[in-house]
Length: 161
Image: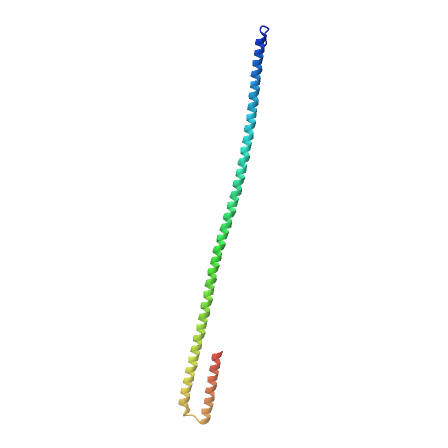
């Protein structure tokens, strides 16, 4: 600190003013530095807030994309499953149609064979009767004719079953 001398009062005043000016400048610079530190701290805090905001948006977007992907995978698998079931239903339909047609054809063939066998049996029986007709009496011929008629009726009834 300067001690004013009594020699020149104006010099002392100017020296005091210089000291006051240096102190004021020093205080002003300290205030400026403190204000700048405060501003910097506020801006750093704002940056941290903004970073957290961006991170939260990124997390939300990641979850949304993950859910969208899961939904899309589920949709695709269900679509493929529907296509598979449609193909299986088509195969089953064709199989049933073909099975029914085969069964109808088998029944027709069985009926044809049955009709043919009946006709053959009738011809054989007729030929046997013709050959043996000459060797039998009138009563034997009547009994044979009745048996023949009964046999023909039973084979015709069997065809309808």
